[in-house]
Length: 269
Image 1 (cartoon, rainbow, N blue to C red):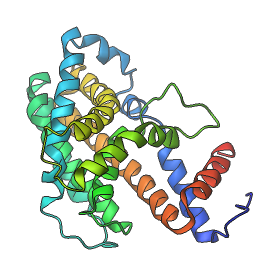
Image 2 (image 1 turned 135 degrees about the vertical axis):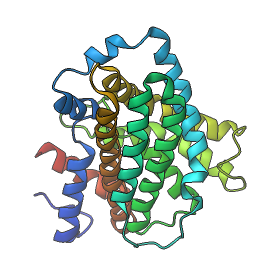
Image 3 (image 1 turned 180 degrees about the vertical axis):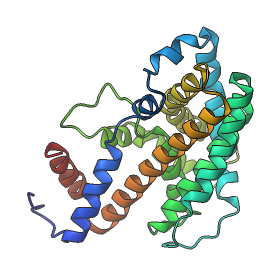
């Protein structure tokens, strides 16, 4: 593996970065769900009413806004404490079962609950990687995870979809950081925060649509809803693990060096 010219990175950290890259550049949720249900996700997409695509976008934005502070409110700020991934998986699986049982109309109730649980799990993983969960940039980085891991037409075999997404979000992250330095995530009227949430929701809603489409396929039902939601949170836990490992290594070696080495690893994947 090629060395970074300006930095000596330890072999242990090199291996951590490689594992993070594999997580972040893994198949999308649609591919993972398709493997479970045994048929293309497009079948489910065809069953969704046209009006539902717009509704899913609105529900996704509302869910992210409701989840931001609620997810972290009950957590203690103890960096490097281990994350409780299984408890969060159980919570999301249960909400998925309810959503699968009641069908599409339950989305407006189920998604805010599952999003809050997932965001809390993401924050838990961030804390385990040494982040302060009450830090503004950490909170925004937690929300960034919902934009990761979906299909991106800008991605190709040699360019990191992960860093493309981070670059696309950079301006709205900066604006939201400046606003939140004096405010809180709960202030929904904040234009800077709303723009950031909208940017996240644009990608997250694609993945939510894929989840809903899978649950719309006949015979999926409550049991299928449990499994699909388990795949859903497992995906975002993977994205969070990769994201916060990269951020931890960036704090040690600098973003440019880590981005360069990540790209070199991606070429050899």
